[in-house]
Length: 345
Ligand code: FNR
Ligand code: 8K6
Image (tube, rainbow, N blue to C red; front, side):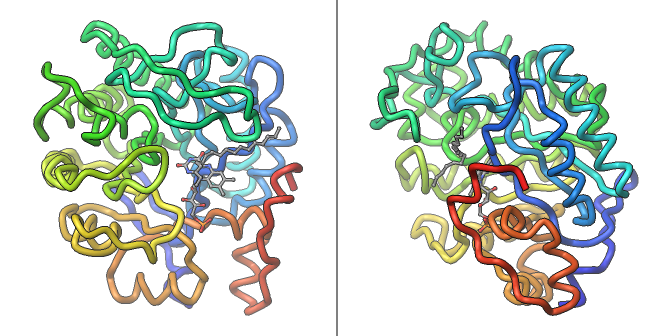
């Protein structure tokens, strides 16, 4: 278990106090104007002993929203709200990245009164969780000009994150949201320079990465990816070639880390040849963050076996704000339950 508590040097700019990260966890608790609250600052500050906190997914502009009360990073009020959070985390000796989010076709006009935009006009079947009356709509396919605008909006949100005092940003390229919708054949039917080949399908993700690197420096940029489609979109065996290409490109970009996006890393994917984490390890040479239903013992074992470098912990950190202390002392953890999502403890 000791390996979890070792400091970890990400790069010349950032060294983490230990190898445990807090996974990004949407809590739907932002205040009016999607501004982070004092309660959120206290919630994050209680967990500042982990090596790195990744904030709950944070929308880059109004039409990026797909769930109620998710915080943003596009208004001055939101930047100031996040300043309270980052100050509280830093005061407790922690580090925090902002996870930058656009949900693409999983948005709903209910939240922003605008259009739903995505790579292609393919609807997700179903409705917004806990708001079952909101059925997902057929999105409108983005024009190339609108895609370029989105890239600029990601860059601006990253700049705002730095103004808000974050230590860096994690681009949310996972879990079937906008960037991921470009990376999978089931949601990307484009025949222009953003579709139809691994190179084209990776273009948007790489443009976002490059725009943000140019603004805040590669050492402070990370990306979360789901090479195995498991939620919000369907897998296609051809997706493998897209991720082979994308990861080869990311190898040349010296990011802080790549983070797997998955709920349970016991899942396997035929077209990836097994676990998504092992696939990423084989194709990506930089720092890798594993995640997905890891107990402390299994996480330590996986890091010792060099399957990844850091572990992100999600649900157990909701249930145990003092997760790290408990693990250090060998105390039993409180089991996570969905009912815990209704309050920020
Ligand atoms: C999540 N997860 C998630 N992932 C992400 O990239 N951005 C997010 O905002 C969220 N939000 C979120 C909310 C809630 C309530 C849960 C349970 C999960 C996924 C999360 O980061 C993680 O990958 C999984 O929870 C698996 O890790 P654990 O919980 O098994 O340690
Ligand atoms: C007012 C409180 C409402 C709480 C709603 C919680 C909604 C949580 C949404 C989390 C979405 C991000 C994770 C992706 C879900 C994948 C599920 C397997």
